Length: 324
Image (tube, rainbow, N blue to C red):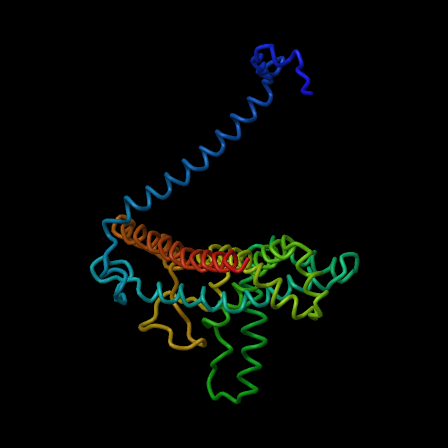
């Protein structure tokens, strides 16, 4: 026998919608929210002003001839070119990347996967990395001059019995290594954070299936952390591309006839060329278009290197998502 309740004869009551609102206006929250938004707009406005200023003043002098010729006179728009500077900047950044990423990744793996957090050695390494990130760039130039050139380079010439000085002088290799030492904290921190973000369950599952710790790191952990490692490489490239002080004493030169052909050759650089144009010109009005066009080229080159790294990182993430 079916039982009929009284609720079936009653019409369905509309549901009451409740709107929650603060009892009083929070002026402090509104003020600081507006302040953060204003600060963000201010930063974006400053960045846009700088970029627009560079593009407007440098685009008129930017041409294929300007970026593809070797200069005969650095301060004459008709005879100048920046091809050696582009080649030198690109080479030093690429060589730096080859050295800095393996060292930074290996150090981050040791700190994350092997080193005990409470040990004195781990604390010393982390303190050294943090202090290294705060050292002024000119100090790295002095370090490169004393260690890489005067110590390693001259001893290498003596060991190889070179009749003339080959390695004991400023060169592309020493400038790149100096930049690698300067940017290695960036790679270490970015890689370490990427390794920490990987779920511990992946490591435990790999070890439970019989894999060794090294196999787990190489086949499970590192592939998952590759996008973060690439992010560290992008940050390192962005910082190193515009640095001038570390390379002033370790490899850059004001002018050279040809392009660098070996790692032991000096090189010309876009950042140093901007410094030369802005400080050693007898006619500022004449060299100002060259200066802006060189700065524009440096920005475009930095953006291009970063875009290549970002594309590689995006492809790695796509492959990882497909595997998962």
